[in-house]
Amino acid sequence: MKILVCISNVPDTTTKITFTNDNTQFNTAGVTFIVNPYDEIALSRAIELCADGKGTVTVINVGESSTEPTIRKALAIGADDAVRIDAAPRDAYFTAFQIAEYAKDKEFNMILTGRESIDYNGAQVAAMVGEFLNIPSISIIKKLDYDGTTATLEREIEGGKEVVTVNGNFVASCAEGVAVPTIPTMRGIMSARSKPLVVVPAQPIEEVIKVVKFETPPARGTVKLIPAEEAVNLISLLHTEAKVI
Amino acid sequence: MSVLVYVEQVDGKFKKSVFEAVSYAKAIADKTGTNLTAVSIGNVADSELQELGKYGAAKVLNVASAELKNFVNQAYAAVIAEAAQKENADVIVLSNSFSGKGLAPRVAVKLKAGLVDGAIELPQLDGGKFLVKKGAFSGKAFAVTELNSAVKVIALNPNAFGIKETPVTIAIESFSPAVQSTDLAAIVKEIVRATDKISLPDAELVVSAGRGLKGPENWGMIEELANLLGAATACSKPVSDLDWRPHSEHVGQTGIAISPNLYIAIGISGAIQHLAGVSSSKVIVVINKDPEAPFFKVADYGIVGDAFEVVPKLIEALKAHQA
Image (tube, chains in turn yellow, purple):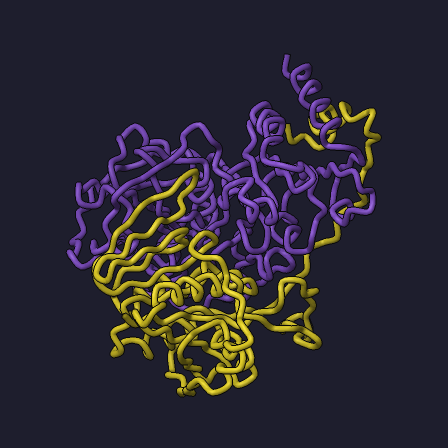
């Protein structure tokens, strides 16, 4: 079995988000980058499925050389080898196209991503890769089992779940529930240094989308504190003042 | 040129988020001086399709084939792309629902279109540019995004735009696109949906609780409060990690991002990752016994007090208010 896991290099979840160049660029100064937390879930499940010699896990990242520490982290978690498409990941369409171009002649049984990246919050790459490769894609799965020919996936839907089966190669985006993220061991960290990391040039594709400006949310007003013994007043405030109930 | 909106049905019915998408698409059609067509896939009665006219859809393409009864994004994307070509649509609107998230990217690739998912406002059409605002960095920022492809796809966040009635007479047209068997390779085996619960991403009111509740056995009062309000229940990450509540209730940066009209946080301190997922809520109420809890800094209303004393009081007050 061969599994490709797509990983995104994103700011740590505790990062204070600021912008530079007249609010057109994310300010990376002093920011720690991590493997996108959802991608870690996908990676951990891939490693479980390939354990005991049942297969190999390749991680792929579209990024410039600065993302290599994040790729090494994925190797330390337990991926067998890595590919970096050498380009800034300008948008999901571009990124998905690069991944599909790489994967198209390699017959991966499955291609996994996280449900979304925590920076641009697109939930697009998995389904776009599926479409570029003309294979099924299941977005936002909570569970993934594979018996060697058939995959059984649970997909989140509003107020419930849907069970889907797929024979043949497919793409899926993983959410919480698919696996518990694996923490790298010291041995994993040591061996990650010598695992193969191949750099591949990007392929050209037209630009369809561009972020022109970032904005930060307006500051909220000050909190109106209600003494605990007068808690009941909250209900009338929500009704008459906030008008939400 | 025209605007096409995909109207997602659940058991033959349209939900509020669909009427929001139709209202939003109608506003774009009006702005660009074109018509709005809807496309519906699956078994929907004519009386339900008629409802779409209320929000401005002049026509609906009704795809009622049995093989497309269940949602399979690959096949549905092919249908929507074919409908877009038939209607010469240059803007395609969908709901950014769980299904929409699996569908919109495939539609975009088929049509070589840029996609904004999680749009929160109408497009600004300035000087020939087509700009759409969406949330980014998990609620910590917004990104104004330019679509520069000929065809544009927008997935609208639930609860962001609202419903606007602009009634027109709607024509129902049967539409039978060719579906490839390879587009139906994913097979839906089972659909489990709790009908008595309000789904979190669509909810207008949300009652959420954290580790301050001390244990899963104490959620009875949270559910009672939510039921009285007609609200969905949610929880913080530690609570779902401890399996006190299901993962599907976890809101925050690595859970679900929501923007309800009212978010009541009980016994949640307000870590930056939690705030990221809820900060676009319109009104935030925080109940916490720690006056230093960071959540109070972003709250509209706060009660510094013990949840086990405050929540029963709120339940009584709500019962009195509703009586």
